[in-house]
Length: 353
Length: 166
Image 1: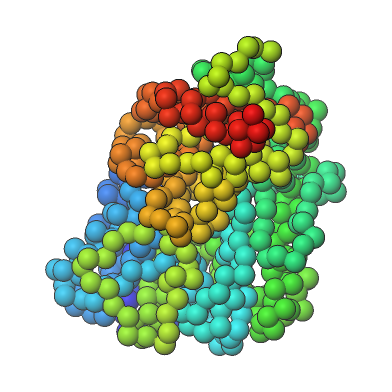
Image 2: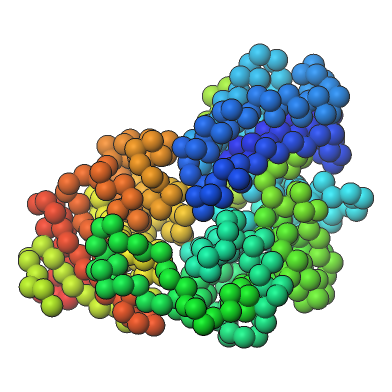
């Protein structure tokens, strides 16, 4: 069964064809990273314009790469949310147009469910036995889930403030590193001493929630000079970018920050896996590409740890198609009234088989 | 220290927890259409304060940083009112604001919390509550509330009563 997946929730325009929810026939991602890197973040208006330009060629390339035409597609799966409204609209409207023109079934997919199903695309595939604990960590999300079956999600915890990837981006900005923060901090950290600074770790409580803003503020305090009096008074037009101290080692701060953040994630995920008698710890999302996180999770967990290959950690449409396959099999369909859902907790996207 | 008007309030918070509790007091007072601007540097406590507002208002979904999605919509059980929480850091002007549907939000029956409001100052309504958050040291933060317009002068007064009992 061929599912065409479309993903435009943030700054990647992506389309892919996946066979039977497991085999990637094509996987095209048009990244806007160069466009946004010069401004240090994703700007919404620029993002949706870039999606509009890229969507048609990207979908056609995905079909061409897979060697199929629209007539071979069994269903169209598109990211419905969560994400940037203006970006989501481009993908959802395009998918609705395709569904209308081709008469193929339409499926609206939760972006986080997509990340979960990136784990099903790992080759060679070993069957995943439920229940599993899933840690989704990306620029916009930090969620710890218990998955008891296909489409069965229970939220164990999540961030109370910044998402993990957001903490990477913000600390990257403090340290004057290029956007996006994740890979650039990882690079700097590889040259630094992770013990140079003792940044705050997880609160030792029973919850599975994360908090990263205290860590971010500690990095800020340690590595910047207080802003000018005018900036503190909040006068308009004053530069509010924190000024980096000249006597700190960016590499040491990056390494110490990264190790604190990773320790928080590892502690919560391994504790949850034990408490819920999971068979495995799964990780997905952009931050799961971080090699220290992978290494620490493997060494701390008594259970097998699984994560997607690097190209499936970041946003892509193959994972949307894979999630679509399992929804399709469960008999779910959406109609042309499908609308974007900018805020859409994964638990409310749960379904029964 | 400047002499404050009735419509202004100057507060010191000694911890993130206290910042959250101040937010809870304000959140309980919000009405549909209210615009709350939270201005301050990274680490000043904007999100911590917003988390408190969400709690005091009764949000059923936890308030977290809206940086990635730019806008979070919250609901509560007691009525159909909405609470919108925006991060304007990456909005550079009217075109970006339009893409995320900001005009629409000002006209809806929800309350708005705006972080980095100075980035869209031309689009802000003249009447609003402006809260300046400043880092003093370690966990100490200074908050200056300034209400513009009748509704917001009243809001500052109610907040003062509920926080200090005077």
